[in-house]
Amino acid sequence: MNFTRGGAPAILELLARMNADNTARGMMRVAPQMFDVSKESDATLNLYGLKRDDNKSFAWQCLVARRLVEHGVRVVELIDTGANDNWDAHGNMEEHRPKARRADLPLSALIKDLKQRGMFDETLIAICTEFGRTPFSDGAGRNHHGTAFSCLLAGAGIKGGVTYGETDEYGLGIVSQPCHVHDYHATILHLMGIDHTKLTYRYGGRDFRLTDVHGKIIPEVLA
Amino acid sequence: MNEEHRVNRRQFLNYALTGCATTMLGPVTKLCLAAELHNGHPLAPKLTHHPAKAKNLIFVFLTGGFSHVDTFDYKPKLQQDHGKEIPAWENTTQPAMGSPFNFQEFGESGLMISELFPHLGGVADDLCVIKSMHTDLVEHFQATLAMHTGSATVPMPSIGAWLSYGLGTENLELPSYMVLCERIPYSGSQVWDSHFLPPVHQGVRVIPGDEPVGNLKSPARSLKLAELERIMLHDANELHARRRPGDFGTACPNER
Image (tube, rainbow over all chains, first blue to last red; front, side, top):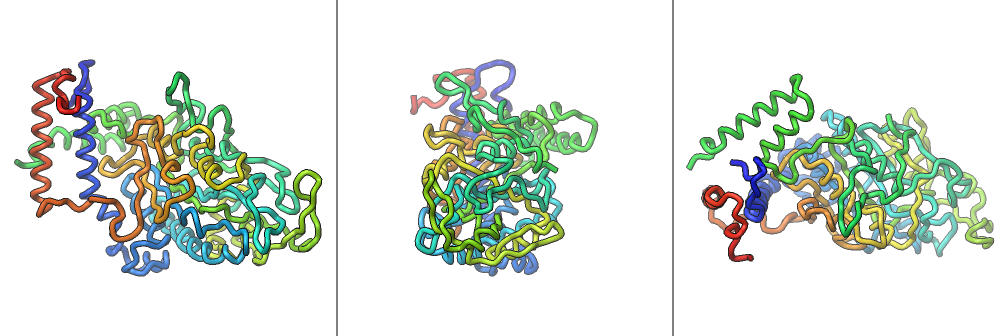
């Protein structure tokens, strides 16, 4: 039956509860299968560098991301570490090495896996961070640097093997084609079929959007 | 009670939807059918503003601010001038620090990537490196929020929540936005929050390990029993709603 058609007011609270029940039931039935990678082939597990009993590593996260996208989850986010012991290398740049070792192979595997399953053309991958680091030292490490940093895009609608924008000879400032965080967001939304200036929500008396009053799509990165 | 007898109409619509996906019916018809199929579910697929290149997004957040000059933005001059004073902020200088990592060209495109990411180097020809990112914030909590929500001052929904709101999702048995993270990031769950958007768009956190999402295992003895109970509850709710069309007062009397 349908509670919402024909202009009659729906029993909204009950409908919401029934939707929530169904989602919870769907989660109980489907989600455990999503997280169980034991039926993946040896070839796939090897591609990600994942041991069969591993249900925790970043490689597991990347493989589960593919499985979730395969089953229609619109947005999957992977966060590699937490608010400590992360890429925040103030003391020593060598601290980057274990983090990179953890992320590098699984991320490349995710791209290869999506390609071999024909999903790379309809999945957008954004690999990003919150800011970069100074070209000068802070001990043997580097300090925070918001003026210039690098982020990646790959997959659906993205030109591969290209760079966009340029920093100066030391990587301190931007000399051409700046891309603000809002521009990055606008470009992602564009590729997902959304005009970032039109996706609004009225709250507290005005229309809000992800990019506020900013954001421009970066056409040069589009395939 | 047999599930198959209950969903004949739904199955019909499902077939119709699958069928029309490959035939001449326009996108509007398809989406109307999809909404019908999902009983007007708030996460039912929605029409895009223009044809989408990407159906899904995988948003990978490497936490803490990885160094661009040690990964994807090769600066030979920085290597050469290691130890020299170079211009820094507002007429000050600082000693340059060359990268301790070696860079090499990868793929036909010849992207320069450091030894930290040899495997990503292997797929260099699929990568677009934006070397000119900039943000207004240089503190982790704020910059992490900005990267997710565009704002570090006013609480705003995450990009994943916005996309869920704008696009709906294809599988209503799973959340539209799922966040896999073992440890809490800077700014905590605010980074996947829906804030003023309906909470159905909020990211669901998945914690890698033995229990990725809490309470997925039913307390009922068997799945069969749990399923029968669920169907009974659903039917009771449906009957209740059908007998009281538009009656808000009797919808959930205990909570009013």
